Length: 50
Image (cartoon, rainbow, N blue to C red; front, side, top):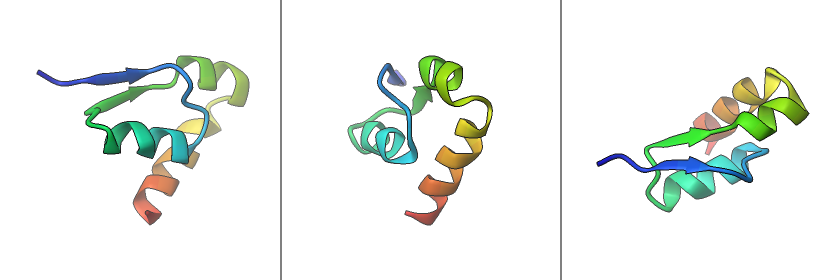
């Protein structure tokens, strides 16, 4: 059963922390509202680099 991380994800470091804890997916609704669509690209770039 996949785990979906939700809440408190505003950066690539936040998303990586959730993935390292076992999440298969991360939900970035709140981060999307505050950071805009660029948050997705920023998180993906961070995860790809680390």
